[in-house]
Length: 179
Image: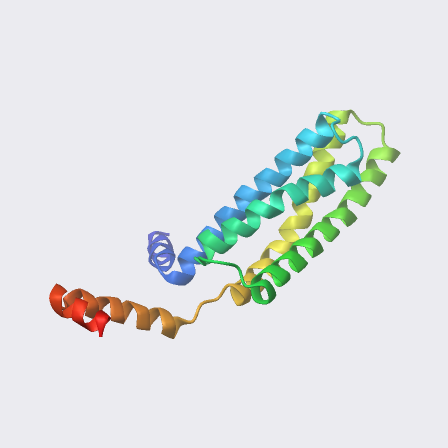
C-alpha cells in the first residue's frame, strides 16, 4: 500500500499528474456549483420545472468551469483562441448540458409518476444531473487535453532562455536586449 501511495505521490508531481489533479478539482468545484444551483432553484421552487431548473443550474456552472479549466488546470493565459479553445469547449459544454437534459426528462417522468415529497424529488433531480455529468467527465478530460495542450518544446525553449538570461551579467543582458 505504501508503495502505491509513493508512486501516486511521485506521479502527482509530474506535469500530467498536476494537470489531472487540477482538472479533477475544478470539476468538483463546478459540479458543486451546478448541484447547488439546481437544489436551490428547484428545491426552493424559484424555477418550479425540472427541465428549466436543470438547464439554468448547468448554464450557471459552465462559465466558472471554462475559466477554471483554462487557467488553472491547463495553465493557459492571455486571450482565448476562438476556433481552437472557445468553440470546442462550448460545443462540448452544450453537449453535456443536452445530455443532462435527457436525464432531467427522465427525472421529470419519475417525479410526475410518483407522489414523493418535494425534497425527494429535488434529490432525484440533483443526483440525476450529477450522474449525467459524471458520464461526460472522462470524455471532457480527453478533449480538453487536446484543446488546451501546450507545445512542450516551446516551454522547454522558454525555460532554457530564462535560465541563460539569469546567468548573464546585468549590463551584458541589457546590451543583448537593446541591440
